[in-house]
Image (cartoon, rainbow, N blue to C red):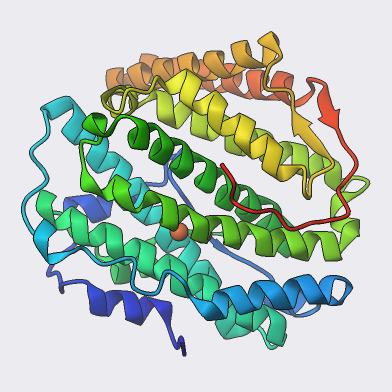
Length: 364
Ligand SMILES: [Fe+2]
Ligand SMILES: [Fe+2]
């Protein structure tokens, strides 16, 4: 499929909107926990070689070309009724979940489409074109369900108005590899849970999660091959960056999930055990590429994450209070949050040797 601009493709799926609505504003918020938009060094991206793993790479590109999810992301005609009838606490958390999901899908879409547009390296052009295609479908699909809530995210506006964070290519690889793999682990854990107890499936969108997260798994595989074909990215001082990204991604997910407990409760899940199941799966997967993983069973690690969530609740209270006292309280909790993060960062990690066989199957 020829992909000129994922953005225009997306816009064609979305009803035109007049002024910027509240939900677009919500998606624009630049809070620490909100998904971000990224840009990178395209010249450096051009110099990436995957020659060391050419056969594996070609097999993966053939999978993308096969496009087994081409017709998956369509809301069926028999589901064209209103699915927004949820009790108030769940309603808010679910809408927030959909908005943050569409923002991260779209943030991936924009980054991948931008890289595809600006690089000349044919391997990178191919890969980022395929991934932009997939993320564009994912974002468009969420928008199809958001309309029940009278919400339409204006993705074209979002792409122009949101602030972009610059990341060197290697940081893009660490961060997007992890977010693709943890995205897989999150969706498959929910899917399996609801498969075993369908009565807790409070919204039909979860029926799509299995094939959806196989896309994310494959995206992660691409970054795994890129990093393994360029092993200097996984050695020396870079290991400290890998540890940083692991902790940043795990801690962000933990705090964000604990801010919306109803969502998990409704599905018969509990946020802490759900998160540790997701971390366990992610730790198993990332052994294909990262020489270290976080010791998620260390009680001090668990206490540290719980403390980060406590700090977030105190920050929210201080923000609501406002004024000078509120500002001072926020500063105090920000320092405490940074200290907790540093303590978590220096906890011992688990080391492993990398497997000869890089590719993995989404077998969870
Ligand atoms: Fe996606
Ligand atoms: Fe993805």
